[in-house]
Image 1: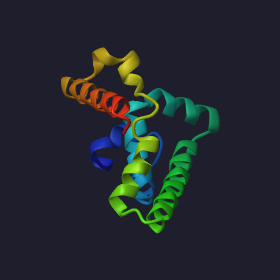
Image 2: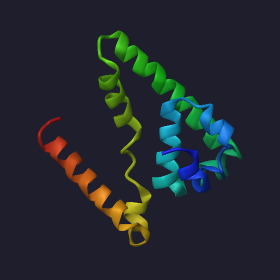
Image 3: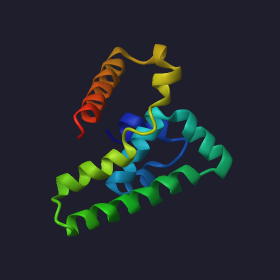
Image 4: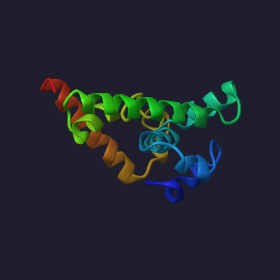
Length: 128
């Protein structure tokens, strides 16, 4: 994804320049949180002030980048480190839209989350 695809969701929290000035992890977090956790994003910005969500995403992105580098220093390759790091932020918490706004989701999004839940269930059942 990127700014153009997510502009409407991202613009309340950051400028295009701010979006692209972040780490790759921070951009992924911004894309995921604003798409699947919109209420959390609004609540955080309201409670902590304008620009606070962007600052939080930027800080978390830097922390995750450093963690990835540490994992690579410990012998993992970049893809392995990325997989471990992404699991920390990509699928938790469960998207609000699944719980409260499912009727407004596109059929494509519903299929995506159904498959994702099946994959996660299989990982748990198989001890992965």
